[in-house]
Length: 331
Ligand code: COA
Image 1 (cartoon, protein in one colour):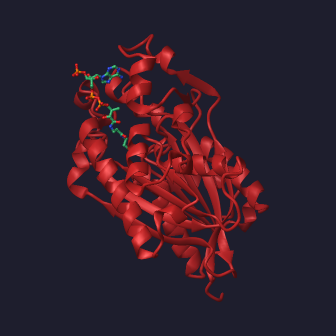
Image 2 (cartoon, protein in one colour):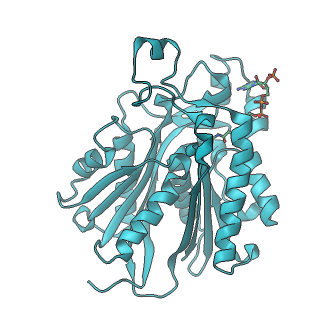
Image 3 (cartoon, rainbow, N blue to C red):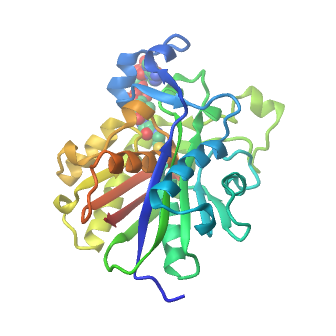
């Protein structure tokens, strides 16, 4: 196969479970309030997966919509990358279950990728590089999370922030020059692992009655510290990619940031000296859906007519690790 000139997004899709959990409902079970959650984070409600609804099920819904949008069939896909920190099981990869449920060919390369909330950008860059190698034709890239299964619903400092959902994109080659993924910048502050993690259930602290009693199999976060790194990581990721490609911030038509906290997004807007109208924000309706947040927002932005041919879009994220990433897309 000749090497493709560009790697482009051919279609997108998103899915959120039907159940909506409002701040007011949360305040019935923990000591919090709608006013506190909205003023500290901007979040008003989040979607919660139904009992028995798996991460792979949500991924399949989003993937079918993305395939339809791209006007492609499951047989056209030869690469499936799933960004998630909430796989159906620790092993095997959720991508294998999604492959089966979608009816993808057994010659599809399938793997999961864990870069937490930066996961979709990591997966997008990985898939585009693989398509760019000329060895794969069409990739399905999915960011999907069932965070309701790992948050501690008795911990008000974390449980109010997260939600469930899935977003997908189909990637393919294009003969048009200078379109699609123009570039990506990925990184990580690996000295900050402890700021946001699930301490137990891995090889360091295997699940035990002790880890259950200490609730160490749930997500733990030092919110204030994470906030500072989030701002720093997203600013650096945005600045680096713009500088690398000689692009001024005001040339960006739309920024799609990771949807963790409105105050973090406002800081990035201030740093880039861009008005908030250039930022796509939907965290009020979803909360933080980790790897799913950017692809859900991307799909909503496209369907809302916020992205047009020729536009330049900046994706920027940070997450546990602490990872960060940015990507520039020309449509
Ligand atoms: N409802 C009511 N009060 C709450 C609360 C809740 N859900 N959660 C915490 N509080 C209380 C705290 O106990 C604290 O009380 P105290 O002053 O009596 O000790 C007070 O509110 C302030 O807490 P603090 O942690 O200082 O709030 P904050 O302004 O830093 O906001 C976060 C907290 C978590 C919203 C904020 O730090 C944040 O968004 N961090 C980044 C998190 C993130 O994005 N994580 C995902 C990474 S991908």
